[in-house]
Length: 167
View 1 (cartoon, rainbow, N blue to C red):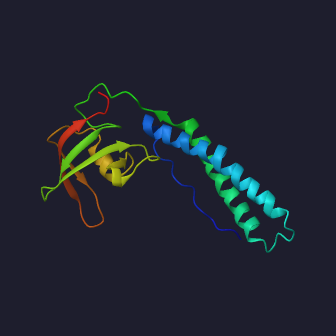
View 2 (view 1 turned 180 degrees about the vertical axis):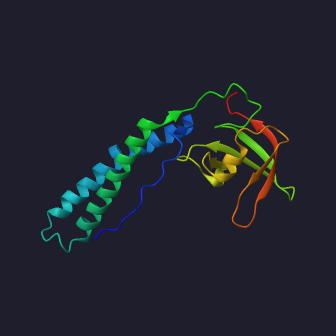
């Protein structure tokens, strides 16, 4: 019996222009640069005879499967994504793409940008629009409070500022 993996829930189908460009660059790199190199390495390793104990061949085939899987995912995902390049009509509220500055109960300031699930990077201050913190912020205005549910207890944030890149 194989390993059953329940289907992953799809994230929001929104992405920023920079996120789309990064996914397209990854797709190009995998398909046009990395895959031909790995294919050639597998071809050369296959010439060495017994493939059952040929580490280069086994690793190369595994890497090809990983690359092909990621390429399939990227192609399908890029088809279904909607690029959001314009700010919303009401820039006084928090929506997708907003850069927000919030203050927590301890007086600490956090800066986040709400981006798509395919491009979030906490080290860059980018959180997925599907994250609990982002869901709590959507639709709020400056000076509103947002209660973010967390395992250790709810956290209250006060929205300090809202900005949309490029507006």
